[in-house]
Length: 77
Image (cartoon, rainbow, N blue to C red; front, top):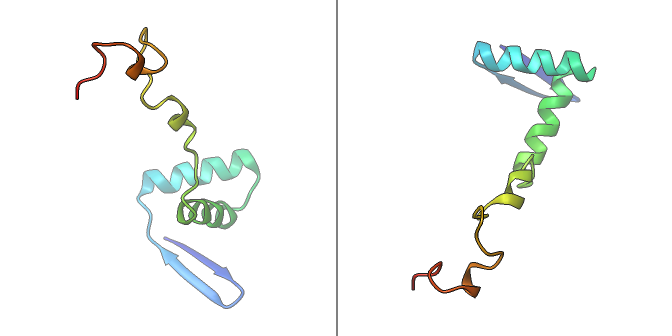
């Protein structure tokens, strides 16, 4: 169980052992406190951000045209 205090706000979060271990390891690697990492992740998630670099590649068809609407056979409609 983690407990975070920031000013007068406290939130207690129960994490599965594996998630807590991953958080501890990342905190060790980055040198950031776990509470700061949790706040940053929560803020990014609530803002619709986070690590969404994969979206750049969403919808890519290997070997297909750049614009699937430009060649017959790729579009059904």
